[in-house]
Image 1: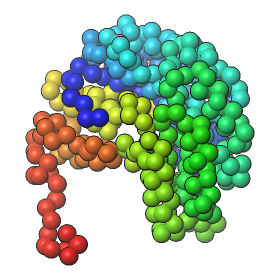
Image 2: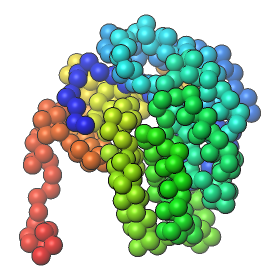
Image 3: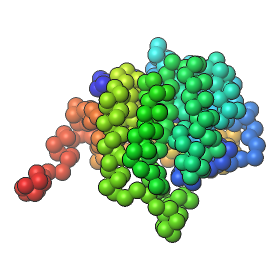
Image 4: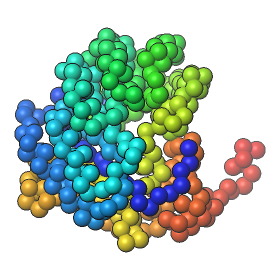
Length: 359
């Protein structure tokens, strides 16, 4: 799965910040809005896309990812317009991967055929659980039946799709999770994302846990939940290629591999991050986080860039290790040396004494 570095390759992330409701465990840049002016937002996203194209024009676009928020609330015409404009700016890879995140609600699933017609060829469903009680705990608006129906509907439209589950939930037992994994595998085809629940500061779940009103499985149970997850997915032929992501060979999310392999990507939309190689230097970008401020700044300036920072070699090495060591393949030594100016041996901490080896 290790790929040779392609300096011409580029990925695009598009952030849609709006949701119907906010989940109590989520710390993403998500907002509930009463109404969204689709045409206005479409124009703004295209304007910011045009801005970044000025420094990357002519490169080869290999993946596009519509994330959020809930990007399946976007108008399919917005997706089509962004993909069409991307084709004006960059050479589109012959196997261009276009992923859309979606919720398994009936109204959003009903629009999947329109998204496919717009150019989406991969869907990532935020199922999170298959049991009704667990979905209530997680603050989700769908039930287990709707989740299964959504997976079936998406499978009938897209050759490549994935769905997410969260484990390590309050009160979750190992046997129940094993049964849920078996049920999920009956629906999965090539990819599953399995995340262990974490308490992110500032979220309602974090505050409930701090008060003692939300109790997660203890460390030993959490470790067993992780181990049985790896064992079951290995048996199913879908090993982990990243800490929380499992796939059959060839079904890995190509867009996310760009992040983990420290490739170049543009990020547009509120709060979106990017990493670009420009004139031999790696530049970090970040757009303004607040949706309304982002919108006004793009309409005024053509972009809402808050950060445009040339990274030093130390920061580059740290980021490469942080991202690459999440994966089963790790960090390519030659790529690390080329970008960070150090060998892996120089960058990684040296063992101190015999205890490092467990003796």
